[in-house]
Image (cartoon, rainbow, N blue to C red; front, top):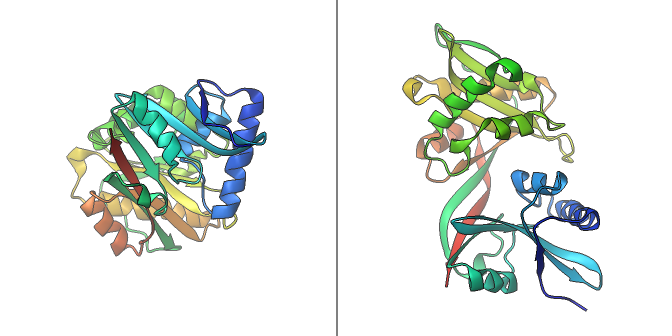
Length: 279
C-alpha cells in the first residue's frame, strides 16, 4: 500500500540508491534530466538536505528535494507537483516556491514568479572574432579561481543562484567527472578577465549534447560585443569535441540575452516555471 511522504535530513545508502534509480528511470521516460543538476549532485554525493520520499509497496515512486533559506524551494523528480506534499510543506511554511519542468504541474494553481527558457541551436554557428586587445585562454583551477569568481559574481550580482558563488562552489564542480578545462574559456584584456564561457558536454545523454553552463561578461565591459564572442567561442569548443547541438538556460526577464541567443539561431524548446504557493 502507498505510504505518506516521509522526509530525512540525510539519505541512507539504500535510500540514495533508490533515489538514483528513480531519477534514472524518469530520465529515460522523459527524455531529459529528471532533477536540476545541483539537486542531483546532492543525491549523488550524499549531502544533507530536506529529502522527501514516497514509497509504494516498498518501491520508491516519488522523490523531492527542498531547500530552506527564508522560504522553501522544492523540486520533485520529473518536475511535477504533488498536491499532498505541497499541503504538508505549507503546514510549516508560509510560502513554498516549487520548480516545475516543461509545463508540468501548471494545474496546481499558484503564481509563476520566474520562468527559465531552455534554448537550443544546431552546431556549428559562425564564430565572432575577438575584439582588438582581448585574448582567450583556458581556465586554470589553481591560478584563476579567485579572479574568475570575482568576475562572475560581479556579472551576476542580482542573480538568485549564480551571484553568490564561493570558492567551495567552484571547487566542487571542478572535481566533477564531467569537468574539462578545455571547455572553460577566459577572455582577458590587460590581464583582467572581462568575460568567460564555461561549457559542459553531456556525455551520458542519448544524443550527447553540449551546454553553455555558465557565461558572463564583467559589468564594466558590457556593450562591447563580448557576449556574442563568448557564446560563439564556447559553442566552437563544443563543436570541436564532436557535439552537434548546443543548449543553455536563460531567464525570461533577461531580454538582452534572449535577443542575443535568438540572433545566433537559438530557439526555445522548453520553459520551466517557479511557482509560488502561500497559505
